[in-house]
Image (cartoon, one colour):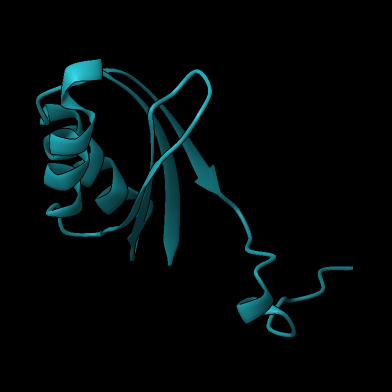
Length: 90
């Protein structure tokens, strides 16, 4: 499973509406309102990085209200739910 974290700067008058529209996009699993330089944090999970690229460019970034974005890819989860499943590469 490929995971992307997208930080979004949103038009201040459209934060809630934009967040609700983003939640409707397939493969978007979570949307958080956050403090700091960005307004929303979006989690996208897909079977491949190619699919994430499609979700971001053809879905997410076409959503009205987005001013700027920054995308990061997760390499590995250290989530408690994943504890014990990690593969040791040493």
